[in-house]
Length: 106
Image 1: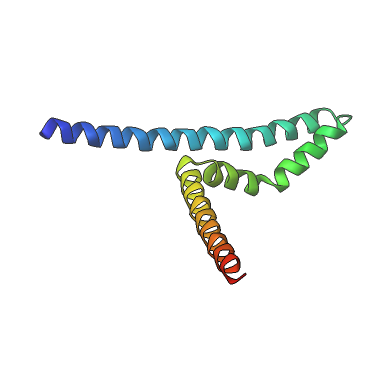
Image 2: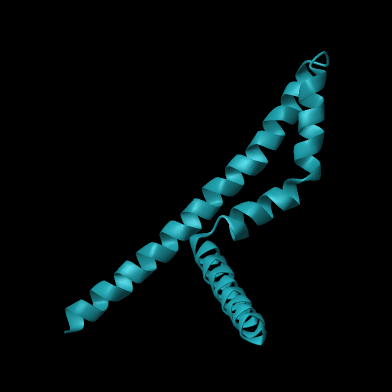
C-alpha cells in the first residue's frame, strides 16, 4: 500500500515537472524568437520586414506569453469546453421551453 501511494506521488510530481518543462520551453521559444529577430535586424539593416516582425513580437510578447501559459494549457481548455457546453445546453433548454410555450399558446 505504501508503494502505491509513493508511486502516485511520484507520478503527480512527474506530471507537474513535465508541465513546468513545457512552459519553460514555450517561453524560451517565444522570447528567443524575439531576440533572434532583433539580432538579425541589428546585423543587417536592409532586412526591414524582420524589423517589423521584431517590433510586432516585442509589442505582443505579453499576449503571446498569456496564450502559451494560459490559453494553450490543457486544464484551461478543458474548463472552457465544459463552460461553453453547459451554456449551450442551458441556451438550448431555454429555447426549447420558449418554443413549447409559443406552440401551445397558438
